Length: 334
Ligand code: HXH
Image (cartoon, rainbow, N blue to C red; front, side, top):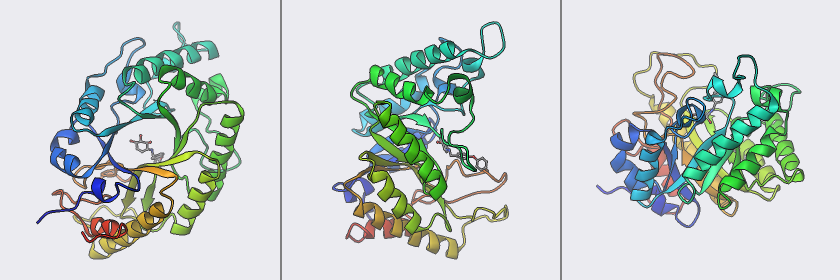
C-alpha cells in the first residue's frame, strides 16, 4: 500500500516540516524523506548545544541535521538564537562571578548569533531569532528573564539586528507558545508592533502550535491567524503537535491512545489544516514537533511516566487516522 506524501499533497499551500534530533534523523530517516520537505533541529542549534562554554562552539550535532536536510533537498529552519531556556549559565555571569552587565550580554549575544547564524548562512533559510519572550499570565508584558532584566526590553530588537547582520538573506521570526490565548496573543502583537517601530528586521511570527484535544478552539486559532496576518508579516506554524490529554489530565496508565482520543485528534487536525489552507497566502510553513509518535518531547512531559501520541504517524511510522483526515483537506484521498 502506498502512502501519500504530505510534502506533495500541500505543495501548492505551504511547506510541511518536522523537528528532528540526532537520533530520529536516523531512526525515522525513511519516513522523513518520504513525508517532509523541511527540518528543524529540536535541540541541536540551541545555545546550550552550540556554545556550551564561552567561545567554544560545537556544531557536530547541528551539522548532522543540516547535512541530512541538504543531502535530501529539504529546507532547514533555524531554531533558536536567543532564549531564556537551554542557554548556558555562563552567558549571564561576569568573568569574576556575579551577574554580567548589559554590554557583556549584548557582546555575547552578538558573537553567538554571528557564529551560529553565520555558520548556517545559505543553509538555514530562516531563524527563530527570539523564543518565548512574552509573559504567560497577568499584566506583565515581557517575561522576566535574565536577558530582559540585565539588558532591558531592547534585547529583542538587538537580537533581530544581529541576526540580520549575520545572515542578511534569512527570514527572521519571533516564536512563541500559547499564541492563540487572546491575552497572550495581544501581548505578542504588541511586541511585534513595537519591534517594527524600533526598526527591527522581523519578517514573521512563529505560532508554535502545541495544542491538545480541547484547546485552543478552532475559532481561537482562526482569530489569532487573522490578527497576526494583519501585521503584514508571514506566519510559520513552527512546532505543531496535539497532545491526547486535556491540560489537567494527569493519567499515567495508558499504554496506547483510546479510540476516542484518536478520533477526536483526527477531527481537530482536519479542522486545523482546513483552516491553514484558508490562510495559505500568509502561512508559508507548517512544522510538526516530531516525525512520529515513537519519539516526542511529550513522552514524560509535563507528566512523568506518561506517554503521548501527538503526531500524524504512529509508533511504527504508519499513518494515523489524523493523517488521512489532514490529507483529505487538500481535496485528495489518502
Ligand atoms: C517549546 N516550548 C520550545 O520552543 C522548543 O524548543 C522545545 O523543544 C519544546 C517546546 C514550549 C513550552 C514552553 C513553556 C513550557 C512548556 C513548553 O512551560 C511549562 C512547563 C511545565 C509545564 C507546563 C508548561
